[in-house]
Every structure is written in structure tokens, then in C-alpha cells.
Length: 194
Length: 82
Image 1 (cartoon, rainbow over the protein chains, first blue to last red):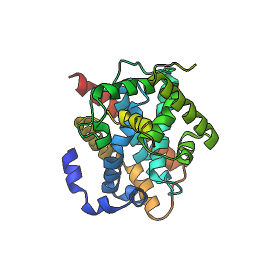
Image 2 (cartoon, chains in turn red, yellow):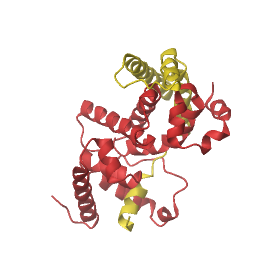
Image 3 (tube, one colour):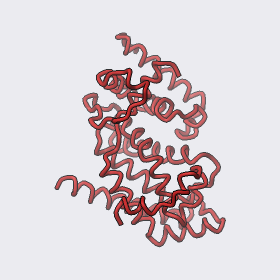
């Protein structure tokens, strides 16, 4: 079945349901999963892409996240948000890949070539070159700092949610965020922080 | 969030998945969803019996998902190279 046919088959009602209600239906209703996929493919891909060096790797890891999400759908018990659940899978997948590659720094030349054609009004004030520079600075952060930065500022998750996803204490997440912010601010001002 | 934090968040929104990737993965996910063991796990969940993480059914479903992912990756790379 083609992707457009799958999406055409989706019942419009699924768009009105919250994530957790959809997740509870995934086992017997592919449309429910397709709606979750539509909602989360882009956020998960962006998070993964911010943690790895190229588009091809990001696609591999993203695909792995969604295969795990659908094959383990019944392990989501609704105790937390679906968003936190799927980002925990993404976190685990990224770290599995990272441990396998023993890689810690994204090659700085790998600024994404595919760019969102519909930036937010705030984004329109920032030049493409400026966005690339910020991307590089984030890419140079240590992996743990880079991850919490992406979860906080890209996904707008709370410290509590990030702690749950990354299996760290809230204090540890706050420290990582503080260090990342200090480093980013300093390097963007042209001053290096040790 | 202040303007600095908004700029960081904005820079990270730069990449978007390719439309072809969205379509190919959705089709592959539909195929894996139709695998009996996943449907079986789904049915038990539908009756109010969540399959516990670590149970045989969940482990089997996870293995099926893993195998499907490797198959998808292999096909994906082959089609990308063609």
C-alpha cells in the first residue's frame, strides 16, 4: 500500500484525539499510529539529526525509533506522555548508535542541507548564515549537553520531562543546561569557555 | 525563553525529513504492523491487558521490529544508491 493511500484511509477523527488516546488504539488501529507518526516524525527526526553527523544516519536512527515504537506499542501504559515515551526511545537509539561509533562530536561541516521552507516569524529575523553558525556551535557541545539543549529548546520539554527521558536527575539536567548555555553564549560572543 | 534560547531552538529546526523518507517509512511501518505477533500483542492490549515490557510477546514484537528495521535500512540504502 502506498503512503498516500494509507493517509487517505485515515479517519479524520484521529486528528482530534490526543496522543495518549491514539497510543491506546495503536494495537488494533493502524490509523491511530499513522496519526502519531504524522505528528512526531518531524520532531523526532530533528532531534536525531541534531545528535548525529549526517542525513543518512539520522534517517536510519529515526526509522529505528518508529519501528521500535510500533513493535513495542503495547508497552506504553499511559503513565506519562506519549511524547516523553517516544523521545525516550529516540534517546536510547541515539546513545546505542553513539556507543557503537564511539563518536562524540558532530563534524561541523555537516550543517543540514534540507531546510524548513516555512520558518516561524521569529526565525525569519535570523539569516540562514546565522542559523548555520548557531547549528555549528550546538554541534560542538559535548553529546550530553547537546542532547538536553535539543530537548529543551527544540522540543520545548520541561526539565522534569528531560530527566525522565534521559534517565538523569533534575539537578543533573539543570547543570548540563547551565553549562551548555554558558558555553554557547560565550562562544557566540567570540570567547571560548574551557 | 529569551532571544538567545529562541535562536538556538530555531537553528535546530533547520532540518526537515525528505518527503520520500516520510512515505517509505510509513509504508514499511504498515507492513510491520500487519505482522501477526504485533497484531497479537495489540489485541491483548485492546482487551485491557497491557503486554508488560520484557514479556515474551513484547520481546518477540521488539525482535520483529528490529528485524524489520534492518530490512528497511537495507532496501532504503539500495534504492538510494540506485
